[in-house]
Length: 415
Ligand SMILES: *Cc1c(COP(=O)(O)O)cnc(C)c1O
Ligand SMILES: [Zn+2]
Picture (cartoon, rainbow, N blue to C red):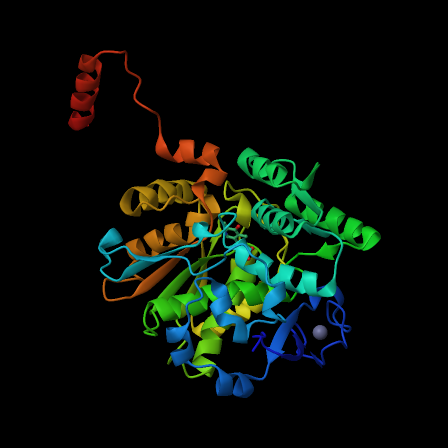
């Protein structure tokens, strides 16, 4: 029998809570407009009747399609082919003095970031809808991800990036065949221009700000953590936060497994922003509406001054009993080198921001060696080699003689 994904029973507005039947609403809430992004609803009793932990134990699917019964996609035949998800969860035993530390390496996705989880679900929907082209505004990774999936699908792809996007990401976009518009401005300017172009040309919109299906893909990272820890939910999960879509997905994934009876709790979720761009943390701490800001951080993938998924993210963090925090660029670059040297996992600045937040939490004593902690590592360090060089220092210059090498080794030993 052909397998199908979950049946969507409706949508709920993340701002006012108004519910819509499938087909009743196009993109965002009719009452709240652009502020009212939607959450996808399912009938979990129905899902629980057909989907169990035993099914997962038997599953030989080594991608996130192993959670197809919880995903809003149709037949298996239209699923994108690039293998996404089921990334490694490494036990980083003893790192930072924590015996129960785990690192979820989502740079092991097809275009080397967690964004692929979202793109694969969005692309499955786009193919079902028979779209002729896809588009997005992106700080880099969402675009690279869309470009990769569009290439595999043979669809034209249009990406709007801020002009200061790291060169390796622009190279990745171009080599994957996307048409790249480098916008003279910030990510938020790129976002606004992309929205106009998408409306004008009728492209499929892969933007977390309007497309409710992206959170659905991102939630699978939480499903995987549960399975990989044998359903023993960790105490704390550290998550980098830019727009807030990953955090929204992480909460939803854990909440779903609890709702289905697969696990007993949702972990405390700790969202980490960059100090140079932390509007969600400020809204959380002040219990107020979001105030957009100018972004100033080396962690370009979370340099999102006007986040659109902040309400969902804040709601999820609150429900989990967690909090939001922020770290400076120095701590991020230090975290980049530290994580790589202690675990072999090489992340870009935004990718290691959650780890930098954990370093801070251990120093402050809010995380102790008794805690079981998972850190999400969301993107490959090769996407931003300039930051990597800033984090890692210089190569040792030597002549062609062995004595040079010996002297250099002695000098380093003395340091
Ligand atoms: C997009 C991205 C994030 C942040 O995700 P949001 O959903 O915008 O909060 C973090 N890390 C990397 C590597 C990303 O590409
Ligand atoms: Zn609404």
